[in-house]
Length: 380
Image (cartoon, rainbow, N blue to C red; front, side):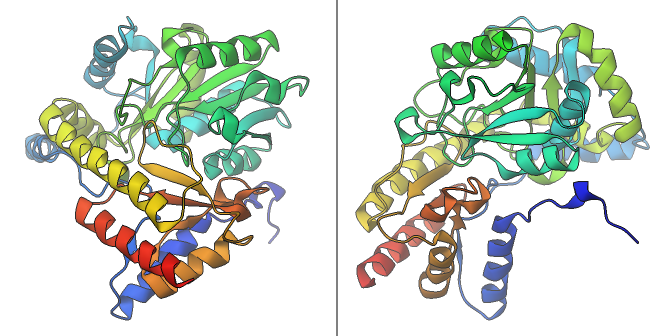
């Protein structure tokens, strides 16, 4: 049986690292996980309690494709609280995680072969989803001087049909301020291209609030999720905000591709939005971990990175240590018992000289991991 050319997507290298770490643990070793980009905590207690109550009341069947009206209304309220944006709930589409949002957005906006710009380093699934949809991802190598965020000059003359940005970004944790976001939106629209803003790490910021594209324009797609700030990775529920005249377009695609996001997850997500004390307690852990990671990596000898504004990653240039980040990651796992991610996932061209460190786990793990990295680097 033949295999489509669209299926020829690259593997997600971090999954290989996770598998190697799991194999080491199966042998009895204690591994510190700095490779995983997910919170170490579970869903807020109010979310699980609400779902338990809903399950006792009756069956949870299909919802409408756009999602539970109460959840869409609560998300719109959040935009007022966080950004002072007056958002019509009818523009919100509940999705099967942010991944479902990307599939819907790319399908709604682009035709076969269209070129879509993505920053490099960047989340690898952008590239692979675009490929699987027979679209053409165009990596835009972002410079350390711009804190690894794209600028308009990076895509001048490239005839893009769309630009996707992330702020805070994975793997760097850096953010676009309002002037930078505005400049990218203006340049994209000047080319007649669509603008997509991945805002999945909003809420996990340290010194200032992240800027949503909706503060600047209504002519954009914004994608978010309950996975990160709300600590609900496995529940697979997210949302997207689209222009008013795109709602029906996206709805028709969602009806056929997904029917709806999981009803149970939507119930839990709505309740999670009321669990602010618990969510801020998680943020206290991330803040402490960020300080430990920044200071500890520098002390260990991983000193070339842009301090993260948000999310829970540090993306370090290790070109002074190795030209093979994948082998370095293997060696760190083998000798130090710390799992880290080589940068090849995020930047196929320059990633052989970078590593991503995640500090999403508990503070005790981060402290132990830093000490192991110091010992490892001292012995090199």
